[in-house]
Image (cartoon, rainbow, N blue to C red; front, top):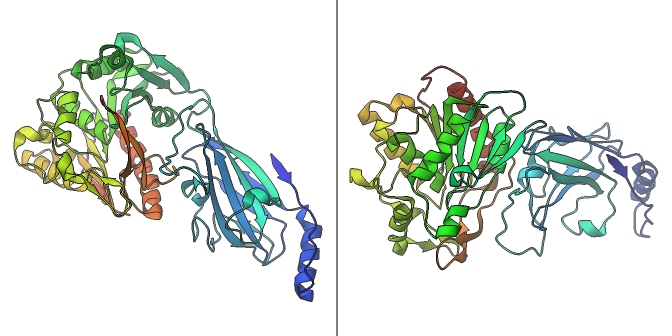
Length: 463
């Protein structure tokens, strides 16, 4: 939906004749300013084209994005452009001269979204209701603005929808077997390859990545394993049987190919993914993806014992000058004691490690180096693929997710507290890493879940 609004301006007495003429010409033309965004409805990882037409050559304008998320907080991004000789700005091709990003950035209006001025500190954008779209308003304003957008009248505006669930994807809440989970089934009759999706130490049932994976043809089970209903009822953390129940649920589902199941973990989810892949007699994985995590853990330990082992090193916690928590040292140095790290040399399925080299939360880079050395010694390093990104931080999410270098984080436990945690990364490099890693992760999953029996291959990627 395109909307066009505008009002004549009165030229200040000091304006030059040329300035006044430009203003009059613009006033006559601004009612015809055309803004288009294509596609206006698409998946969250799909690029869109923003085109401004019918302005004067050399006209300075600001393209602005605004989003109010599920929790009521507002986010914005903006960029400054100058129209070309044909009176056009193409965001996919033209240089931003400033704003929340600079240069040619086709999706800068998404990944550079930031909380509006005056917002509470420590916000992180996460879509909690995947059954509704992100509704982002893209607008065009006269001049190169840096603030006060709410007080200005845009020349044109368009609302675009960004979905995690493609048309036809089915969302199925799962409570059987004591699970707290959601299954996302792709469109079509199936059966489909399956994936167990594990987030990190913040707990809760986080669905948006599983929904997006289902939109790409993989039946994905988002699993809450730190704050599930069974833990709330018993006061006890889950054990390995809980994860094996989740695997069996996928394996036995009539619309899932039981012999083609993978696992994906981020942060603490990586600890669980590697542990189950190597030691569980139930898990028969076709592949594993581990993002921003480590293999360091007591291999005989339960979830509770793994968490406790991390807490024992709390004296290694550091704070930066902004009093943001740095936890990466808790697992350093990487131990040499084999009982304190997963025996990845026993892994029998392809493994993809995604690493941000500026991760300030986990020693993902050091862990990846040790994993590679362990697998080389064991002779199974042909199963390993490492994607390592300089200046990327901990929270490597689906592409165009707004960057959060630090955010509020609630520590789980009997005495919960909220801290400001430093995740690391630099905005542009991290955003590039998210886009590249997601594309290569989808390729890896398709090759291993749809392809042959053992297509793992060694490779690495740096941006």
